Amino acid sequence: MTQAEIKLSSLLLSEHFGDIVEKIGTHLIRMGSQPLRMIAHDTGMSLDQVRKALCVLIQHNLVTYELQKRGLVEYEAQCSRVLRILRYPRYIYTAKTLYSDTGELIVEELLLNGKMSMSATVKKVADRLTETMEDGKTMEYSEVSSTFVRLADTHFVQRCPSVPEGPEPSDGPPPPVPTLQLNEKDMYVVPKLNLIGKGKRRHSDNGQDNGERKAKRQKQEADSNESPSDDGIYWQVNIDRFHQHFRDQAIVSAVANRMDQTSSEIVRTMLRMSEVTTSSNAPYTMPLSSNEIFRSLPAGYNISKQILDQYLTLLADDPLEFVGKSGESGGGMYVINLHKALASLATATLESIVQERFGSRCARIFRLLLRKKHLEQKQIEDFAMIPAKEAKEMMYKMLSTNFVALQEIPKTPDHAPSRTFYLYTVNRLSSARMLLHRCYKSVANLIERRLHETKENRRLLEKSQRVEAILASIQASGAEEAQLQEIEEMITAPERQQLESLKHNVNKIDASENQVDETIFILESYINSTIKS
Image 1: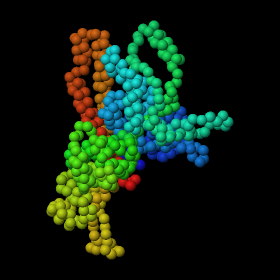
Image 2 (image 1 turned 45 degrees about the vertical axis):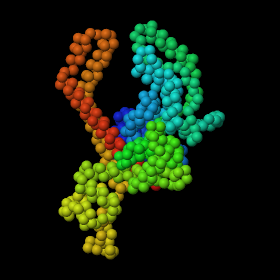
Image 3 (image 1 turned 180 degrees about the vertical axis):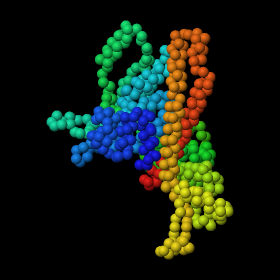
Image 4 (image 1 turned 120 degrees about the vertical axis):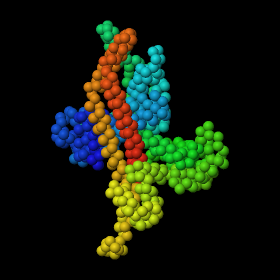
């Protein structure tokens, strides 16, 4: 675990869960698995605080626990899972794109709460959607429930492991840790719920009588409501499935940039057909016949079977080898080589960064080394058509920043320089790891900058919020235009300009965080794919 990852994890935990949870989480990331009392001793916090912090971290799948042979329960932080917090906005936006506002709020609620039952999620989302609707309109539970079922069918949400049902042993003390089980067949099975109702609005009751009536009504509802039929069945966001979707989108975009829109639509269709049948870490998709692909193409694409076969042949013959041919049955069997696709995307990212950082000539040398694998200094100068002095300077720049590696091949055992070949090469895996480390540092710096900007302008932000709250309450009571204008003038022109500047800077930092995270995703996917293969 690098220092950059620990620092970024600490910042993310502090921003989302507060200082106490951040202290416990960061300590576990640094020290590894530890029992409860040792965590309390090392951090100097009370056992109660440590227990509550661990509950929060376990609820959000950021910490796991395991019973050791000595009988102690040890807790271990999942740093890779903590870093996924950075990608939460992207998960929510993807759910909105695919399943509209309802899907967005379902995923947002599950990410905010870690784990939730389906009935609680449906009711909460229906209430939130009703709040945003016009007066007189409400959101039916059944509509939210149907969106939840679609998310489960496409594996974007999944069940959490639960305690198996059975007779509870009455003799002896309870086990130190619960045994959680989950049948893979039931992972995406939605319980049959009879959710009838509509979302409710929050009403501000000022009168004492209204308050008493409301409390009485809530008590009656609580007494009459039975426990829902999905009690004990909890759901969570399937992050791997979202990552699979991001990977597929990147592959489709790469094919569209390299060839044309029709080729990308064919690849999109192949990925969509195999998105549920292919695991997120598989090197290839399941083989698909040409006939199956033709039948599954979108209705708007009026291309003949013959043209489809020509496109598939073109894709299979492409040097990048995104698509491969695995057989001749059914008009030809085709697969998408996910590992090679990720390698090509990571290579393109490396090339782009070299070009932006060192210039087009360095990028030419870098691409040359990727193609030729190993080259001597003189060969690089000749092939790249760059003068010797400039080529040496460029090679030293890339060598010092670990984009390029130098390999020594001695002719004799004494490693004498005059009898040794010095070959330059690009180790894509080590370059990707180095770049990933720098990306983590960049995101941590961006978060720190955003926090600093907010802290420096805290008084102005608080004043702006107070003015907005006063305006909202006066508008609700039907104030005149002159009164509203008078309150708006409480914020002076320079202050308003400063607020606009702050908003612009924070938005720019947020956009930068998301862009760096896209690079992180490509590099992480490539590294994981290479290690597993």
